Image (cartoon, rainbow, N blue to C red):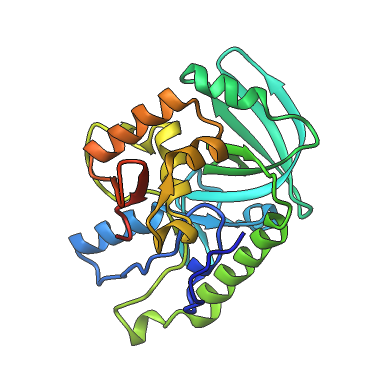
Length: 267
């Protein structure tokens, strides 16, 4: 489950959906807005209890441990699932609480993906945190079954590490203008046709980027397309189409040959 690279004190040593880059906080200015936007793109590993304990009644702009949270990753057991024509609604229970998740159907792949998700199954979920009248829920952009159960304690280790870093290790604002915020980068702030909405990449492309941004593939020659297809359960023709689009938009590149792909985010 863990990459072979030496532990360097950053949460990049833990897998689960991406890596933890250093973000920079700036004094109030236009550059500060850019930094906030980048922070909001981070993918934060959280427990349901952390989400439930949010004091704000806002529908967005959530703050956890001093960091703005928008995209999150959780891991738990599916305790309920409802299939509808345009969406799938399900509950995920991680042992600290339950949270409602919604996966909108945008293409046939979404239906195939959700068809494999069953009640009682452990899943890894990436989604946008939302709120309505004090209720918290996730708009899901990626979900997959957990096949390696070492990933379950691994996720809680990630949550503990990120919480510890942001509450105890991060320098105070008054003493430093360079404040690293821990979270998983979901996508770089490129503006191109690869984006299907303001929230980020289309579902399949986002899944591929999340997979390639795992530490195991950041410090090597990358991942073979057969491995990506097998791990993400994406049809080969669909995978190659999405990989080519990511390459064309500068988000992914080939390494030792045309079969190995690597993310450009941490190249």
